[in-house]
Image 1: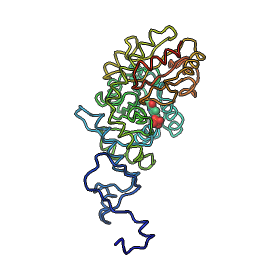
Image 2: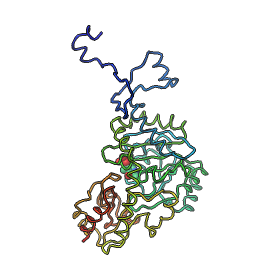
Image 3: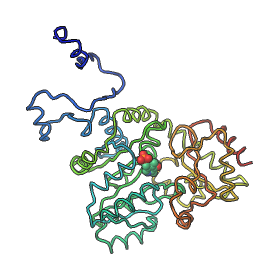
Length: 398
Ligand SMILES: *Cc1c(COP(=O)(O)O)cnc(C)c1O
C-alpha cells in the first residue's frame, strides 16, 4: 500500500503502531483524538454504550492512568473506591468541583485561611455567579453548626488542613459529619499532605482535591490538579461533564510528569517530615526566631488534632523572624542554599515571604488576624540533608 502512495501522501500518513511487547513505562499519548473501529463503534462510544477514548479533552490513556493511580492512593487501605479526573491546575480542580455541584442560590461554607487563590475564586468569580461563600473559623464547630442550621442553602463545606501558612488544622471527621447531617457535600484540599500523610476519605469526606503541582509531582515541573470523589455516578456525570465542557483538562505530558513523581512519593514524604521536624526544633530554640508554626511541635495549638488525622507532620512550616518586615526580608536575602520560589512540595527547600508574596492582595488587618505577620517566613522543607538546610538558615539568621 505505502509503495503505491505519492511521496507527499506518505509523509502525511501515520505509521502503523509497531508495539509488540508492552512498554515498561507509561507511554505519553500525545494525540488529540483516537481512531474509531467503524461508524457503529463511534456511535456506541458517543452514546455511552461502549467504553473507548475518542478525543483527549474527554479522556486520554496517559491522563486516565495517573488519575486512577491517585484515586487508588487516596483510598488505599480503606474499604472504598474512588474515581478521579486530572485537571489543568489545582485551581481548575477546585473550580470544576464547585461548578459541578453548586447552582446559583446555593452557598458554600469555608474557612478564612484558605489558599489565597481559592479565597479569590470563591469571592471574586463564584459570588458574582450567585454562589455565595461564607468564611468562618471552621475550627469552631459550634459556630459551624449554628451557621449551617441558619443557612439551609449551604450545599458544600470546603476545608483545607493544614492551612497555609500557619499550619492551622480543622477536624475533618467532625466537619464531614456536620455537612452530611445538613445535606451538604464535604470537600477538602489535601495538597499539603498528599494521601501518604492524610486520607480524608477515612474521615467521611465526599471529595478530595489537590494541586498535584506540589508534593504529588514533587519536582516542580508541571502544573496540574485532580478531583477525586467516592460517588462514582456524580463523578462520571456532573463532574466529568463540567470538566469536559469547561475544557480544563490536564494534558498527557503533565500527567506523565506527575506519574514519574508519584513513584517516589512515599520516599519523599518519609524524608520531608523528619527534616521539617529537625528544622522546626532548630528554629524554636533560636534567639532571633519568634513563633514557629509546625504541627509536629507539641507547642502548636493543633498538634493533637494533626496527630489524629495525619501519619506524620509533613514538610511545611512557617516561623517569625524577630524584627518584622525588615528582618524577614534581610534573612531571606542572605539565604544561599535554600531557594526563594512561590511554590511548595518540591524536593528542594523553598522559602517564601507570605506578606509580600502569596498573601500580598489580602488587607493587612485580615492577614494579621490569620497570623500572617510581616515577619513571617514560610519554608517548604525539601529532602536534602537537614544539616545543610540548617546551616543555611543559621548563617542567614546570624
Ligand atoms: C498551589 C495550591 C493550589 C493551587 O494549585 P495550582 O496548581 O497552582 O493551580 C491550591 N491549593 C493549595 C493548598 C495550593 O498549595
